[in-house]
Length: 161
Image (cartoon, rainbow, N blue to C red; front, side, top):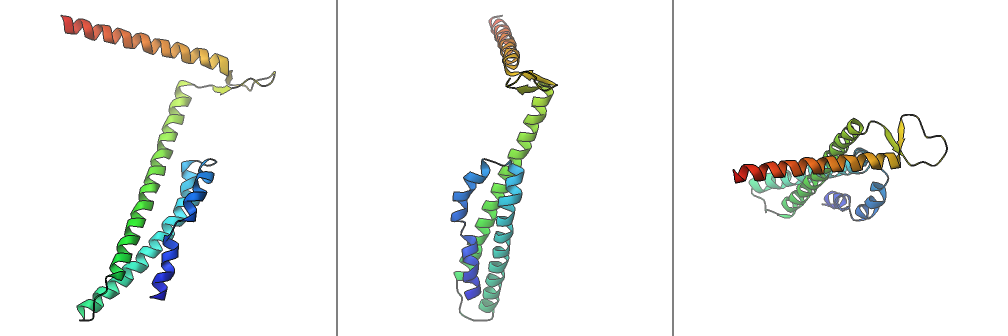
């Protein structure tokens, strides 16, 4: 029983959520997965296996005719829920990483030049100044608005006829 109580402090992620916002400001989702979530996943998995073993042993004793204790079953269910919660967080961060990668690819596709804020006399090669980038974005927004208006007008004419 003392061994199962040692697993309980590992399950308590109390101080970690307070530290996570500081970490997440500086790193991307994949790095967060590797540095923060993966060690927690390993700890939760070890606790889950230990609690599953305890619950299995308790069920075997119950089958042998000994008195049943629900304590191990409840610990197992709690550790299983914590394991699923960390898996959900990992899935969320990996989806975020995939979305970030897709946005970066789209960004490089539609804005092939890096955007820089002019700070010196010599901008880096293969880049465009921020004012020029704003002009391009305004042009794209106007084109999208014109296309939207044309489609809206076409839909209205089709509805009227």
